Image (cartoon, rainbow, N blue to C red):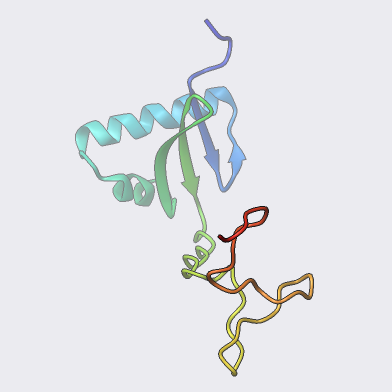
Length: 113
């Protein structure tokens, strides 16, 4: 058995001590037993913006935020990793300065017959 507890908690990204984490989990569990699914209520009653249980590195982690979370990055658009086509409709050159390969070109090392 490991010396490390299977319960952990962090407040605004800062890890709590094992004792503080266990106390927070105990209060959180008690609230959830009485108010099933009411994580927002627990957060509100304790002066937090949000409380989220998760699992990380083999441990149950209770993530607490006392301030608004930073905005999430927007989801990447399909094809966002490729340069946009130029006004003439041709693809922009790659970073190495060579033009992008054209469709239908044979794969390297293979000949067309």
